[in-house]
Image (cartoon, rainbow, N blue to C red; front, side):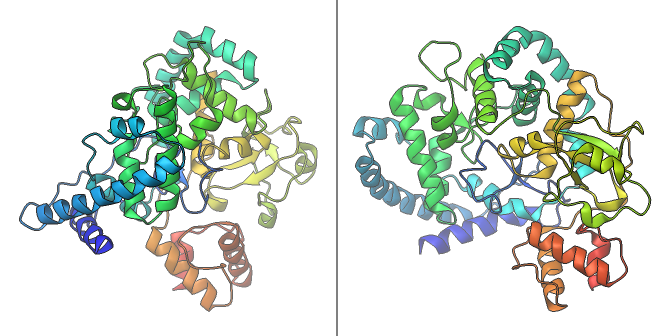
Length: 441
């Protein structure tokens, strides 16, 4: 009965979104959670993207369903309290945390809707690395330079990367999220679709409250429970957040961003950040380039790539930053990058290529670097979630196994796309484009 009620509420809330323009290709609220989440299930784009407004349907249908959902929700809370007590959460903490907490259908609407929205890499970067975000980043660098230099010296993570994560996650602290984290996580855990994961986050959030780092009324964040200036989820906060100011609290929520920025640096350092190494550099590929080499698993030194005709955007061989791979986020028609170890480190914050490129390119622009030089195929668009599923089905039927139909373009799907392209005389760049889907049809 509970699942049926929630499904009805979600269906009503989703109704105004029919026919909405495509938005982000990835789901929002990505934070330092890649190791905690199944990356295929919850890859997200952290840049603030305006979502289509949705007004609840007015009438007698929504109100009774919401009341019923909240009644079931309160019953769930009673059962959850017993599980939380067994894990060391005190009654005092639980009473404070769940005072007046109710079911939030808006959280469920946002969670259920995201995979249907798509946004091309170029549109994403237009927003992520906008002139305003670059300008504000340079302003923030001037304002926070001393603090960022101290953080860089302590953790060995370039200050511009820390600043870029801050810019992507909360527009330099301007949009930290104002939703009650306990309410959001409770709603998501109760919903059950990823209940186990969100209940673990809820327990972690209660541990944070119990430790006294933040009072319950100030534990605010995104609809998905991501918190503070750089949007840590609770389990990542417990594992990696630091007290950089020395006041005895790991405070990522207040107007002072010191602890949040240091925590981000500590997180990136934990996963192997190499100071001074670029995340990647834009490159030009030679005519006749073997696009089968454009694969993250294929790594070569810049000298080896140069021997194959791959040059920096300036026409010269790429300096030796270590072994790198060729990345084509828009296939053969868009910009090409040689990416290095630090690309993988940023992926631990968010596994989406669009996000990593956004953070890396924003950091370059804050340093004074120029825009991406090669044009994007702006007449194209990314496939929607349903279209990606259709593509996978059609590829599999034609003998190019994608390893399942999940609407996510991972290594198996890219390999299937490349095999189909090779078999049909197309450029084998492995890019899942609308033209490819049309060819499959």
